[in-house]
Image (tube, rainbow, N blue to C red):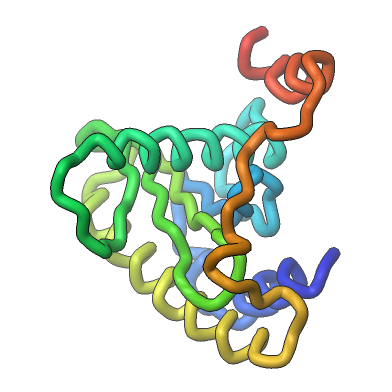
Length: 168
């Protein structure tokens, strides 16, 4: 584990409340899709690497689509693909570190809005925790160095292996 991954795991060890999640998963991944933390309360056929790659890809696709919106503002976007009881919610962690995404995947939930609010609270606390713990670490990056594109250097065979469980 690299330093950033260790710090994220330490945060979730100290954070009280993950045990109360039901029918849900939390995943923190980098922009290139590499998962740094995963917590699942249900059995699933997907693995963390596949989920991380899909999350990174969804975020980058949505981010690219927002470039077509004429009015440019500095806003915190979120990605939500859901019904009234199940879905995927992704928000970008913000701080002086590489782009990271906190994803919440859930089903059979009575009040998704309340849980999304809780995930936003976790995000805010994790942002502060990372900034505090990375203040003198290598994982801090300049804004200009944040551009990392998913699948920029990957072979067709590696792509097939990565998504074989999804397509099967």
